[in-house]
Amino acid sequence: MSNVLVYAEIREGVFKGINAELITAAQSLAKETGGEVQLALVGSDVDAHVGEAQRFDLVRVFVAKHSELAHYSSQGHAMALEAIIERGKPKFVLFGATAMGKDLSARVAAKVGASLFTDCTEVGLKDGNLKVIRPVYSGKVYMETVSKAAIQMCSIRPNIYPPAERRSSSAEVVEIPVALSADAIKGRVTETIKATTGGKDVTESEVIVAGGRALKSGENFAILQKLADVIGGTVGSSRAAVDAGYVPHSTQIGQTGKVVNPKLYFAVGISGAIQHLVGMRTSKVIVAVNKDENAPIFQKADYGIVGDLFEVVPLLTEEFKAMLGK
Amino acid sequence: MKLVALIKNVPDTEAKIKINADGTDIETQGIKFVMNPYDEYAVEQALLIKEQLKDGSTVTVVSLGPDRVMESLRTALAMGADEAIHVSDPAFEGGDSQGNARVLAEVLKPVAPDLVFCGKQGIDFDAAQTPPAVAEYLGLSQALIAVEFKLGGDGKTATVKRRVEGGDEIVTLTLPALVSCEKGLNEPRYASLPGIMKAKKKEIKKIALSSIGLGAGRVGKSAAQSHGQKFHPLPERPPVKMIAGEPKEQAKELVRLLRAEAKII
Ligand SMILES: Cc1cc2nc3c(=O)[nH]c(=O)nc-3n(C[C@H](O)[C@H](O)[C@H](O)COP(=O)(O)OP(=O)(O)OC[C@H]3O[C@@H](n4cnc5c(N)ncnc54)[C@H](O)[C@@H]3O)c2cc1C
Ligand SMILES: Nc1ncnc2c1ncn2[C@@H]1O[C@H](COP(=O)(O)O)[C@@H](O)[C@H]1O
Image 1 (cartoon, rainbow over the protein chains, first blue to last red):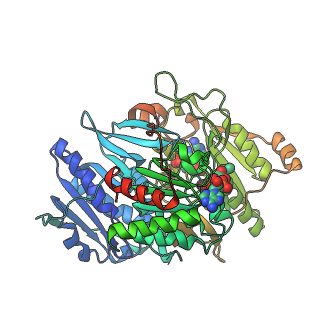
Image 2 (cartoon, chains in turn purple, orange; image 1 turned 120 degrees about the horizontal axis):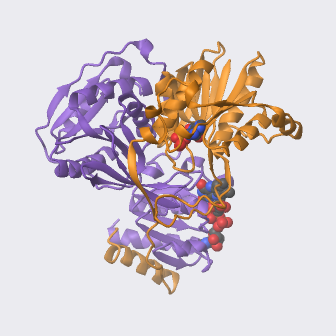
């Protein structure tokens, strides 16, 4: 009977998509241990999200509210989550491997003496303990490890688990009082700046259309954007495209950019340098479009087209449009 | 102001990672270890603040690990750090991130830093776990993945811009605080020749288990909270399917395969 607690990420008033994926992982752990799936909602006006939380198959929703938690703060949110853990007594606590999840999880783990595995791509159980797989050495190899702590935490990468089904449940809502004074919080988020590119972040996207140096200009990235729009994707890039000033660093994928794990990844005019591959090679399906048949990217791709991107990509966009009836 | 940079030794980014025969570790033989690239930004940021303040502020660099970390500590001294601490004891070996963070926090207590800079993550285990744990153990405020850092005019606060999904966040901190550094925060300097010569003569202070307030059971392997570590190679992808034909046919065929075969669209 080991309970599984999911920390629900709420940013800018939005109940993030990763939460439904974490619930799926939690449900599969709870099924094996016979424990309950719990959700932690932390913030100031999180009541607005209780209804959303109750649409999932959960046993309990813990709500920790405080006016001091209106803006994210590592210290404040960690204290609130600690109070929830004391009450819910989970053996497992799951976070998204997101900026917020990584900020909070290690703090809370240190607070409650839990073990923590970050950035996992697979979670399961071994003899009732958390067993995970996580990429290490910039994704060059995978490491498997098993916890032996009393409380076992992990953060899970986006797009690993399918979102949990929504059907109204009768999850009990439990309010957890948090004692917080303003001076217990020494740092907080005071402003959020949206990226000018708009849309989803590459790490949150299930489909990525990434372009490299071959795009030749920032304007030409519109060709990729059109394809992305048709198939519900986000535009990504190689470092060469960022260094040339075509697109902002926030779109860069690879060792010094972001690590992504979409269902479908288009590498368009990208040669496939190792530093780029480590950021995208766990993608489920990889399509490469390159005019050089010997480009290394073809060795990592599932489907390859040798051709001029300026010709091939617009044709692809048309074909997808036709198929999707757009 | 007391400025600290925490540095770690990791395999060079170009290193070929090979798994050992029984899969329990990687082969370290022949691997070149360097200062974690993100820690260079941490050292640089501490030096920039010291130079900005010109008030006798000092930069202390600290590393926990085997003797090879001394090379990275020397590099940091050559860049301009005032003092280096090598946290070293057989008892610390085999520690996990949290155990190491607990030790580092104990080492930092008497230093009483105003600002601790770390790398965003170690490019070995990509854990990104030590910095927030150190912050928690020392009761510091934190801002991770910093791309901009501004010290408040009063020297008691700082504003940090950090990278998050879909944009940036501004975090306002009251010191003492911990900041983990992302590429773009600054341009780490190269050590100058006089700097290297001076660094050679500087003493690297050693701190062992006996000089911190933790029992042997709270550090290293005996405090590690995981076991059964096993390394796996990446799964091989099936060979690529090259799509031939005229561009129009290629596009049509790819879209068909993504639906009919890969079942992704
Ligand atoms: C420490 C370090 C960290 C790094 N981090 C990253 C990182 O995070 N991310 C990253 O991406 N890189 C990173 N790099 C850089 C990496 O090594 C490569 O230089 C970079 O990925 C190359 O980008 P590219 O593929 O766009 O450009 P190129 O290598 O120049 O490739 C362009 C490709 O486009 C093809 N092409 C040209 N014209 C056309 C056309 N009309 N139609 C179709 N194809 C065309 C060419 O055949 C070629 O294969 C890093 C390097 C170092 C040393
Ligand atoms: N053994 C160590 N000694 C000193 N600093 C460390 C050590 N391990 C981690 N750090 C710091 O914490 C950062 C993140 O490391 P990690 O948590 O291992 O990903 C590093 O970039 C260092 O700044």
